[in-house]
Image 1 (tube, rainbow, N blue to C red):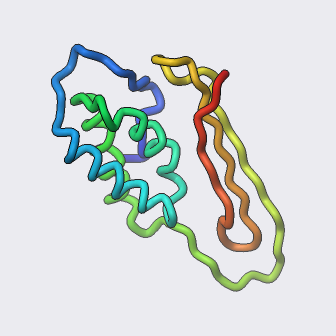
Image 2: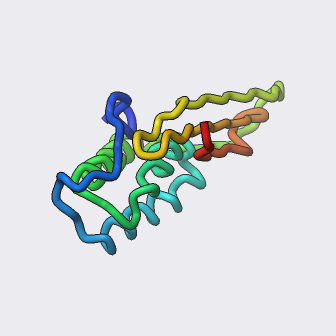
Length: 128
């Protein structure tokens, strides 16, 4: 997979698709949360998946497996700190305005790097 999450999909709480085992889904999302310490690129996807821990359906499970396929294809990615000649502070931010279909909350995130690697990042849901 080229991206951890389909940019055109909008996950929501729905009663239409079949349920999955909550314990297995929670375990998978928990493992993905652990991986965000060194793979901040999956932070938005994991944040979105964690909204459905108590009402996971098949569409959420498929989205979580997509993150796993992304990780398998990008095993050499991650945060690396190495010696560099010049240090520069660089920051990135992004948000999706009212991206959650269920409660119209927005998700915003940021990432800051100094030199060769990220030192601070976050992804949070907010009221729009």
